[in-house]
Length: 294
Length: 261
Image (cartoon, rainbow over all chains, first blue to last red; front, side, top):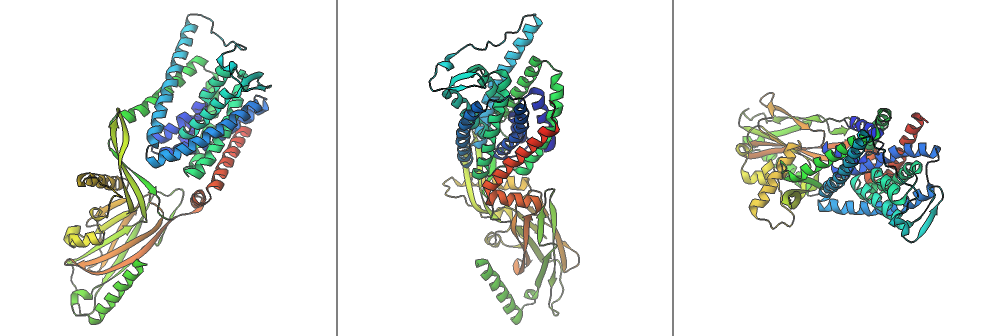
């Protein structure tokens, strides 16, 4: 069952070119695995799935190691903070609530944005208009910030502040919600920092790999909710599924893929919202605080 | 320790009773056993059953009777601390709002009997020996909630435990194979916690406890499950590092196998 879930999510991640953590974690939660275990275990799975991606981008020289390093350092800070807060919320009995609320907010927002964007793109294509491409070299407010560093590989000269901001918030969200955050980081790097397209994915994958490895390690120590057996099952399923997904994805049009992904994201978000708003069958729930001495 | 003294006392009392042996009713003793003293939880464990069986032994001069003896088998898992939460609607969203924490509740609890518990022994006695779901000592830690509220939480806790198969109470589930031989099978579901289980068999007659016997059942994870589990609790840093390396390795292998470009 879990193997199939890993496979399905792997298929989707190959199809849409996403990490899939934000789909896998909810799937695990909905299938009855405790949210804490789902989140922590998916961080481990993301390490595996991003590792193979990093490898292939490395071969193609598609990684800016300096940028990834700065992102990673900030990611570790965010991740440590996330795991710490995760533990506190767990002891307060509010972890599930925060996870659900965050998913509703993020998936809702991103789903709507994606839907809007892809519908517009499809309409444009129907009307025969040329798609508006990105204009590289154009500067925005981000480029006016201080503490600039030069990144030769990405041909960038930007402030560390936005990089730290992006890296640490992705690290934080990743360790609290069990998501790699690629679907948020890639747009942020492209639109805020103007990182070239051929470098952005490899670089963000490396940052995700590092941050999630740290998150796995910290979750193991702090909340002891990483399940290696579950993670391994997910990894194997995911890896196989991703291959099929990528093949199917190549035969589809970009905006249709984004429309599908947007719908999917929105659905998962709505499912979380439903659980929060509709009165539960049983108002009571039991949590074991201190396991028996073994 | 208290436990050992208690059983010592029982043994002493019983031997004294055996020595004096005045009333025939008290001359009945209990011999019981379990089909296995160990349950191994492997990675494909889907639950198991344990057979509790035994014999009611009578002195030669005791007239064999059947029908008025009652047996109770209690299987109790290691104690744990749990919190029961209740959700309330706050700002349109269902949130864990109130809670009650119980210390030292059994992680597994099964009661099998020959008759309804209330026909077997007095309520006070059952309370004292913590026999039956209603008689488990569920005192909330530092709770000042009104009695009705505490009861609601207690019922919710028991309901949840019964639902996931960790707590059971079945009347008339002990079979008599002969007037003196008995047996019952206790289901141990897939989600049973590990640890030392205490299996106690009580023999009653006319509301009076005649004898009791106790066995210990060890439930433990074995093989890969056991290694990873104990590692995760005893050396979490090693476990974490291992998880990361395993993930990197899997990712690398996948990258090599499915190398496309």
